[in-house]
Length: 112
Length: 112
Image (cartoon, rainbow over all chains, first blue to last red; front, side):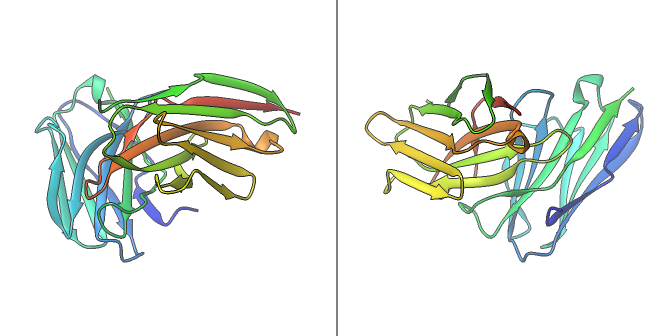
């Protein structure tokens, strides 16, 4: 079992729906990340939070909206997604920036 | 310059063999090189990592070899087992910048 917990494990949504992905870690890590991974491809960085502040946004479309309510939680709010957004969404955390990143098992997202 | 090139794309070995996966980079500012192991339906798990001040690092059956002058690093898996069958990603990042640049991945199959 990983120490980064992601919910839900699977999500199917229509293009007009609004949903949220949740990530939680209790390792005291102060950096948290969202990645997108398509089948047979490496993870692609989307966002980085450091000390609950957004530090990196990799030019992600605004239909993806991250939120870091506290040092243990990271959310990704989804709205008006496209079929090409179907992917595995991974959360990761690290003690600080420039430290080893530990991944959760992801949320498998399907857009109908 | 931001790329990490990984080879081979796929690899089949017999149990007990020593699969070798290679990665090359161009950006000399990279100073942290982790390897991740990913099983189907799971997130990437940090396997082993190295910094450029050492040429080799071993953890159990996994060894990283690092050649700073050639800007190459490789993963060796000693006495490989069917349970090692997974996708392996190399990655690189710059000090103080917590973006991992991933290689394309290697799908390893270890046959009994």
